[in-house]
Image (cartoon, rainbow, N blue to C red):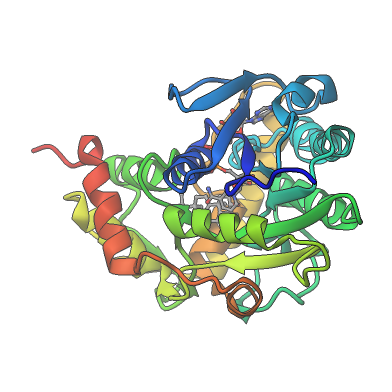
Length: 341
Ligand SMILES: NC(=O)c1ccc[n+]([C@@H]2O[C@H](COP(=O)([O-])OP(=O)(O)OC[C@H]3O[C@@H](n4cnc5c(N)ncnc54)[C@H](O)[C@@H]3O)[C@@H](O)[C@H]2O)c1
Ligand SMILES: CC(C)=CCC[C@@H](C)[C@H]1CC[C@H]2C3=C(CC[C@]12C)[C@@]1(C)CC[C@H](O)[C@@](C)(C(=O)O)[C@@H]1CC3
């Protein structure tokens, strides 16, 4: 009989990214052995073995999967991109190569970082469960390919490879490259004066450490015959917050003014659609980066919060860091974005 190691060996694909690196740090903290696979290198750690490559290539992945017990797949192109080819290649085809590499390397557990937005179509979702159908009209290419990716991973669950999808939503925390930096950027350009809608829409924002905790529990749950195999799980702070309260707390915490003037949601959403349409037309000529994409407007003006009951029941998930503490830690970590006067 094989000797049972007390702690498993993990591979984090996308381990140089925001979520991935936090996951790596927590895995080390909990005494796991950690490999990282990424196409770029953002930090060094002598406890980690790094593999640089493209996840679309099975032959790049295989060396990183040797003797690995759990693969965490949390790599994706930046969601703000509008490059369909890139999303399709990395999120969909790349995930298929991750699955076949797992099978070839004899990896038994695969945890995918999906997104709760796979069920979001721009209309209110309140306390949504995992039983909601996938969005039939995904709101952007990112979401469209996250759906393809999640389906592929759940479908590939079998006796030899146990798979699970974790669906976080609105991840924030230290080193997040998009949420806080975008909000501050808007504030600096004077674009954060406005509230889209009535300001009373509840959403999930989830502290990165809680998302990480959910991933590790999900990976550990994938024993033979576990109910969690082949399923998707929402991981949230279990504490929905008004979108505009959250943004205001971040802005005020960093020394900026909170948004004040309300503009009608539907009006802005249609403007964003029209503007996006013209940008697409002009794309061969000029590249315009939209501040208010239809996706962002929808996220800013609707309810979108989810229930994490299933994760609580099936693998005893509970958030480790509450909202106030999480906002506090985040604001403190962004000293360089604080308003200078
Ligand atoms: N940030 C959020 O709010 C959020 C919410 C829900 C789900 N997610 C999901 O979580 C995951 C991680 O997101 P993040 O915010 O940490 O993003 P990130 O951009 O910080 O990290 C992604 C990493 O993937 C790597 N990568 C991209 N393409 C690759 C390729 N072809 N080969 C190898 N590596 C590649 C990048 O180099 C990067 O380090 C993604 O799957 C994303 O869809 C993020
Ligand atoms: C309109 C205003 C005021 C915007 C400023 C705040 C803006 C930048 C900010 C507020 C909400 C936030 C957000 C994302 C990007 C930044 C953005 C939009 C994305 C899309 C990243 C990808 C994830 O997969 C996904 C879908 C998730 O978590 O499911 C999230 C959903 C929540």
